[in-house]
Image (cartoon, rainbow, N blue to C red; front, side, top):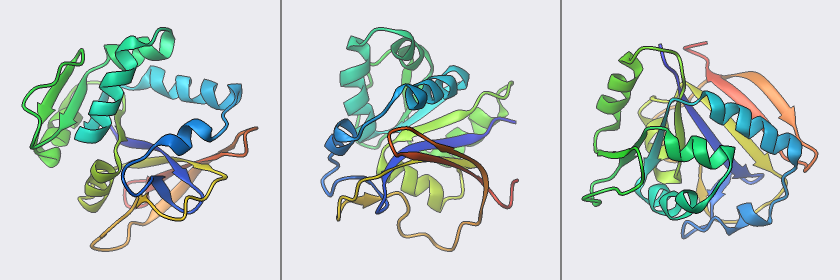
Length: 185
């Protein structure tokens, strides 16, 4: 069965973006070839991407103008955009949906084992976490503190028990942590 994998960048103080959704910190945070190679490896295996409205708007404005293997992977794969306000989506291979639980159940029933990748944004990640729909968390923690912003986890009904299954330190000082839900490990 396919897994839902959240892959999110986060500051050391737990924020995925600034208070108003700013992602500028990501462009200031250093990355290196080791980190870029690991992300590319992950992207090669992804089957479907899940995005919230804000992440869709930002990524649809960026990726179609890019070239190279990463751009080909991101632009070429199926994308499901969760929104109650968008009426259409123009990015290649993208479609709209409104019910994450129903959509994820449908995607998990599809043949194969390629991950269903939650790429953003913070609001979608929070709602999927609250609903217990994420099987694996891949969090890259950067050595940077914002002091304020949108956290990865918010308004949980209860705790989410996780099991650490991987740690990758990067030359940039960032660390990737991979956790599976303890109740599904």
